[in-house]
Amino acid sequence: MAFSYAFKLAARSILHEKWINLLSILTIASGLLFTAITVLSVYNVDIATKKLPEKFSVMLYLKDNLSGEELENIINTARKDDAVKTVKYIPRDEAMKELKTTLKDTKYVLDGLGENPLPDSIEVKLKYEAVGPEIAKRLTAKLREIKGIDEIEYGEKFLSSIYSIKVGMNTIGIVFVIIMSAGMIFVCYSTVKILFYRKNDEIETYKLLGATGRFIRAPFIIEGAVIGFSGGLLSLIGILSLYYTVIFRLSYTIPLFKAVVFPVNISLFLPLVGLFLGMAGAVIAIGRIRY
Amino acid sequence: MIHFHDVSKYYDNQTALRKITFSIEKGEMVFITGLSGSGKTTLLKLTYLAEKPDEGNISVAGMEINKLKESSIPLLRRHIGVVFQDFRLLDSRDVFENVALALRIRGVNDKELKARVFDSLKIVNLRHRSDSYPHALSGGEQQRVAIARAIVSDPTIILADEPTGNVDPDTSAGIIRTFKDINARGATILIATHDRALFKNTGRRVLKLDSGNLTGEELG
Image (cartoon, rainbow over all chains, first blue to last red; front, side):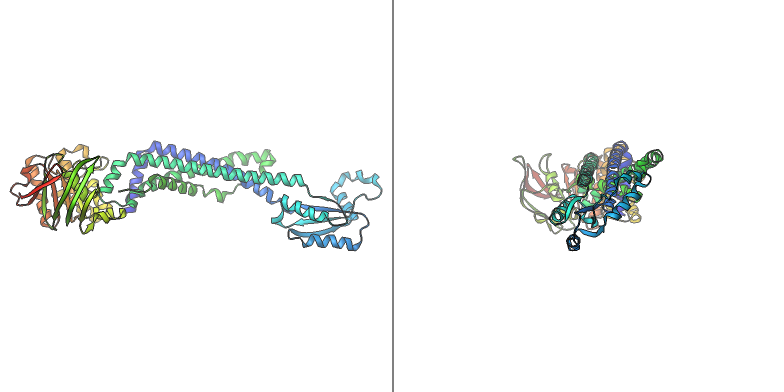
């Protein structure tokens, strides 16, 4: 009964103050849309970097004429490290065979070489969670101390820049989401605060007639929730339109856009996020009811 | 039902009430009289806790106001029906909704609410104006709506601040009759008025206020 009355009051207020509410809904919608685009970008960079560990390996190029004992020592030392997943010995002949397969039609470039110039090597693959510049650096430093290793290669700069991009994107994403969330809460806060001030007389009368804080707050919180939810719904429509009319179409002509992953399930949460932010703004705006 | 003991109230070093002590027992109908500015409205405000006393103790419906938690104030106010001097009607609601508000706050269901609102409007002869908005009513009609709202929840205490201030003598007599009827059903009533004709020959207690002092008591 009291709940349906609160809904009725909220609906009446939303219609009565339609312009200010519409403005708030549009502001929240654009805020959530930008947030969704940021999250989408971070999500895609994250997916791209997640595929990296499968391809990442540390190559240990061995000195010539190593004894079996020395080779065993290198393999065992690498295997014992917590970050290491697999260790594979690649003899120089196998390496050459692989190189020829890779070069395919251009393998004639190797014709004049005569003797196989490639060294024996060991491929060390790291555990999924261990792939990162710090661990790779630590491991290579440790392995460098073992006798018999001529050179170690793992694409240090490439790994560092990819991880810098990932960390940078994540940080920017988090900061952006926090700022935008605070902004949207502030929009709902201001809207509800203005309505609350406008209805000050009415609220005073409620209090004098014995209304509880809950009775007074409920219509405003519902109003904030409706504003936030509507903003979220609009942003969902916006992000879906953006994806299907721009990115989806562009992927036919620009291959890079084919790699863009759009998490439809997650984007469905946008109205709920809006609802939460709207309610939070309203709760903060009303604050404590004083008698 | 209402007990004031040595109650004082000050506004910016001005004394609104000074060491007021009186008691109103359950089922009584009492008048407070005095000139404008004598402290009648302040006394009523202290009773429904729109103001807090600076000194002294007040007890209303068995609740010690000085010890009352803020969260319990709505509970106290639900025991009380108030006819405000400025009516405090909501302009955006029709007469029915204005009266119904007191019941909605108390969570009364729609069916009961409708019956009780129409009963109250019938008592104040405004059943036919239930769809009107306050701005379309005369001062006297607005006052009667305020009375209907004060009595609709069947409160144990009714406080009325100049309830006949805007009405003609006939309506005024009608309003007092209404209060007497409600009082006969057991409600305790405290009416603040400067109009001596209102309590004349009623046989009820009259508390006299003068510049914030309780100067005496007589029978009307």
